[in-house]
Image (cartoon, rainbow, N blue to C red):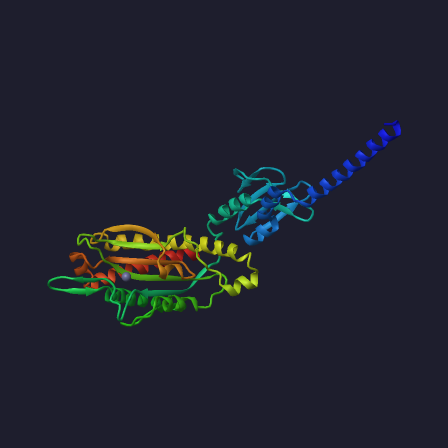
Length: 353
Ligand SMILES: [Zn+2]
């Protein structure tokens, strides 16, 4: 091999290697670094966050620091500083806000902390209101529900449910004359479960309006000694489909599950609070006669298909002789209705504070 041949080979190898390196670099550039992209997708602009919180954002580009204020409460932050100052007193560690070409952005953890902080502040809650209350006496008509049969008397769940629902509706209509109070059945008829839920779902709601759905039932057990009341709410693990197909098309298929999850979380929390308020009032009102068996979660059909904070109340066991006898007494049914009514009022007060 001559020296020229050798140099040619070296030169060719270099050209090939350089091309390879260029191709490799191009490939690497075209593949975005996956992890960075994913985490940034969840990030949001600080101005967007402030807007969604109904808060005011002030930012000084010289000091790279700013304040988010709402209803007299504030959060102080600075770019690339992993701490925020809450109400000028408490310090909290968060992922630091960062600057991009056109905005200030923050990570999900940051937004979570701010949401939690502002939500917990009195006078800073959202302007939500309860537009309608749907009272659903379980069963009816051909479907008696649970039956208690004893030597000297008999009772059917559907009648207990209807009596309580009537009284509850009456109280709600007096106390909330400007809200829609609906009964899914007014007499001994049998609307299907779908019809009951549909009735509630046809109420037109503004963006900040909610419907409460209260289903009233009585319980049965093979064990004649079992007695007591229960309040059920939607199981948080259950993934509801709250966003219908129309909305999904409108907003784009990929965003629908996100909206869905947000709505679901909100309604689950509210359902739990509604359940707690009613359960507490029932304990006060009938606890001496009937033990509270707890707040429970289940995927009840009636509850899970309703786009609203929903609970299902089991007012007592028709299969327990003493409790069944109480459930035949108008005065006792009124006490139950009054307890549910007070619980609903407590909830509305909390919800609209
Ligand atoms: Zn029932």
